[in-house]
Length: 134
Length: 138
Length: 150
Image (cartoon, rainbow over all chains, first blue to last red; front, side, top):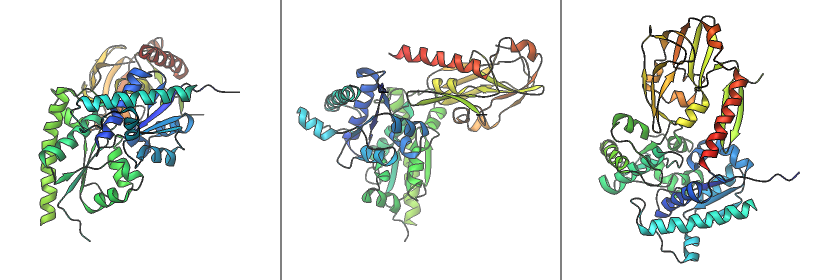
């Protein structure tokens, strides 16, 4: 019997060192709160890593999309290590380059670049959610 | 080999489900960017999970302060999981409890009260940074 | 027999401890002889968020079923601690003073709030649900909450 998948877990790296980490948070919350509410769940990466039972259970049973701020791919690698390979792995600098959006410069006190970058990444995440749920 | 105490690593959990995750992150930035730049440093918490060499070296060779958003203590646990003892662990909710008039809101961006609370909390962390640096210079 | 009834929505697992009595206001009572221990249900603590402040009454306080025994304040809301039973407060969980988050971490265990010497449990039972009854009510409340968000 084919089971229809109704939810996708989004795992943002939330990396503290780079502005792209902040953008991953902006984008993730935008998808959850505005673009695909009801179809997505955020997996809190630190809780996931620290042993959060609910986060790990969800990630092992449902498709996941990871959103990383840099090539170190912490969210993608952590997810693979703890629950299995993510269904899709998104990289913010690649997305921004593809869409011709300027790189963010601030880690906090968000300016227009950060918000624009967040919107662009959120739209890519939403597109990925739709593809996974097809 | 004794640790160099010239830098103090400040690690926030950055939890994405609660405002206290955002508060912890903001406190960390306030310390490393504004109050103790160059002395207090930050790195990405998830780098410890993927065993990034530079991140592991940073937390192994310097004292570490963690700021967790909630009692799950993810930042503290992440550091301890690689065999490093946290010198001082904070919980962002405790700062709210001490300053009830500054109620933080927002996960992506903190509200004004949250930013004021972060600034207040960061002062306390900055004193701890100073203490750890002074200990290291003894 | 399982210790908890469980249901999952999104990534969240909501539990109901088997053997307790429950009020429709989402408080539980574990009865042992003439004493009931009470606290918040897992559903209530999850939906209201991390407990920041707790105001409690003193031992000796007389309470009726459905009356308030203090307040809880989380980042999301302030709400009353509504007693599921009638009686007299004989003990307040002192651990909660320094560690109110125990209510979130262990709502059916270390996060208990009061012990009450019961006055008329048989009468109180009329308004209470058993574990299965509350489990069904909880699922309805969760569904209603999810529907609101969509």
